[in-house]
Image 1: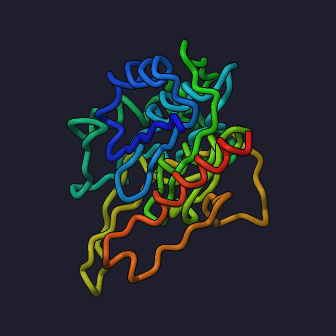
Image 2: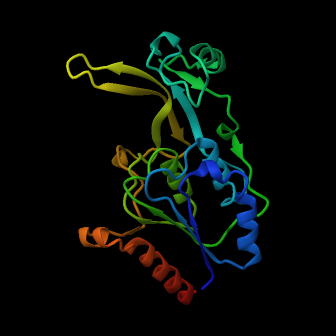
Length: 244
């Protein structure tokens, strides 16, 4: 059984290593790939979704349908606004992002200034064997985007639990802060909505990406630190290899 296990804790560290990784698994004749996206972290940004996805496709494909922004009014961003990682000041947010939004005419604006919003070219060394993505309830945001768009490929299977993020869209990006008047609890409100280029399924609205192979983790397994999902996927890979 030649399978590679790829654990992603933070995609910001794999920018310079993805090509080397996929070259290595090709050189070693790896036939099955396991991508572990469980837990917090995982894939952090939309461009990282595009980078990793490019190694799973053999022809150009779209990932994102659009990124929508409800308002371009910089006055929403009060003194509690956290500019990082988007800019160093409120002025820079206005110049780099808000002034470059395109009015849709439907009550929101489009952000169009990103390469990952167009067609994504396949990598020079795509992996076309079976791919198993491990997920749980802490798989959300861009990790769910990758899980969802990858699950549309015939050779990709989701193993574990329903993702915490919604299967077609999520909100993130620049946030403004507000304080609840009675409790004084601070709240950050996301203003950007990323929508995947996949068909909307009304029956699944509000749900995450559902696993092809559900695996439940019992309280006893959790306390004991037993990774039943990882054990399951390795058994599944071995079983599927014998069946071919």
